Length: 303
Image (tube, rainbow, N blue to C red; front, side, top):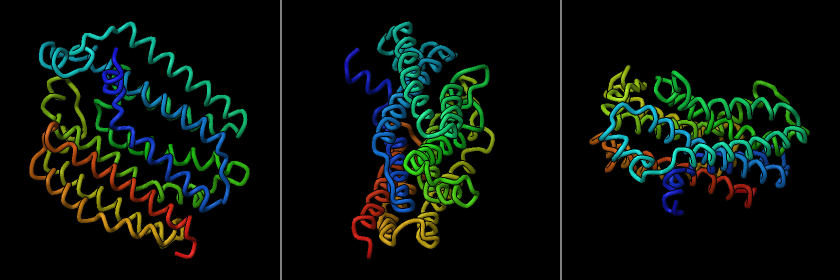
């Protein structure tokens, strides 16, 4: 297997969906608590990244095995069939990656407290059962919720906990503050899944995957896509109003025209090859600007 094939298999281009929630959690940790445990969060980043790659391999593996369209999907669309990759090799590769990342997570839990164990257990359960089991989460009208919450909120929450575990309290408003900070990522990651399901609606139906779009229809799904972009942008302003982020984060609103442009383009045509990239760009640009403007406020406190 070449490096290029491996990167496609683990969907390396989509890794902003895990890296940026990690970075915003890092920023908030320093802004709110003034502490960073770079050794712990460094190991967490490695474990998170490896597990994320393993989950993407597992998704492709399960999609290939459960596909009902032998010729079109299994032989032309899915990378495993298209490139004739060994299922046995992929099974042991993803198993090794999951075991290694879980081992790092368990060691971290012994160092910072068992709340990390329970948060990690939830993330691993969602990651594995997202495409596994008799009723995978991805084939139900739950994919957007689980992908958004798990990658958008939980990655940031774990990052904050690792940096501030000595001072962290499991109070409602303390957790809610992290949720608000993570809400832009949560909405944009959920929108990534929603856009994917809108584009794949007919193919999913043929393969007996009944996603949220199947139940609410494409028109309502597109309205939901717009609504989640609005919520993401509103939460950025809310984070500043509640003093959860520096004033510099308001500079994120400079990308509103870009988000509107990409949203309009997707509303006009929903195609995996041509316009799905709009949701990817909104996530990548929106989340990156949120992190960069947060960093500006950390580096120039009086801004």
